[in-house]
Amino acid sequence: MNKPLQSRFARLRNLTITRQQVKQQAALAARTAAPLALAFAVSSVAHAQGSIDMSGATTVMNSFKTFALYAGAVICLGSLIFAGIRMMSGRFQEAIPALFGALFGAGVLGWGAGWISSLTGQSVTP
Image 1 (tube, one colour):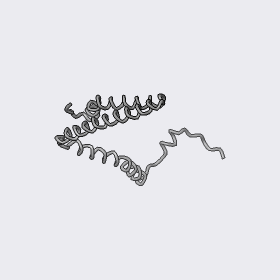
Image 2 (cartoon, helix red, strand yellow):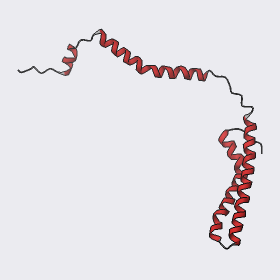
Image 3 (spheres, rainbow, N blue to C red):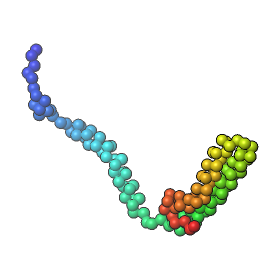
Image 4 (cartoon, helix red, strand yellow):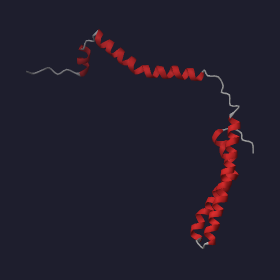
């Protein structure tokens, strides 16, 4: 029961490939390549799109800027009121976070339009 030793190359050379194996490999290749072909087709359609009308975006961004101004004013005023109440009652340690809240509100007031412009790329009138 001694089998002669064959190298891998010799065994590969002796293999026969049937038509059914070729068909199976072709079907496997098609199933693998189909999602890629679909992605390429969709991306080419997306690139063929015309320009987008952004005329209303500036109006929306100006509305967001107005909201940021009002929100910053409310945050600043509310934090100052709560800090003042806590300071008048002698709880200075509890007033410090409220003072930082007032600083945050002032930051929203001052930098809100710049934040909105940098996030959206739209020019916002000051």
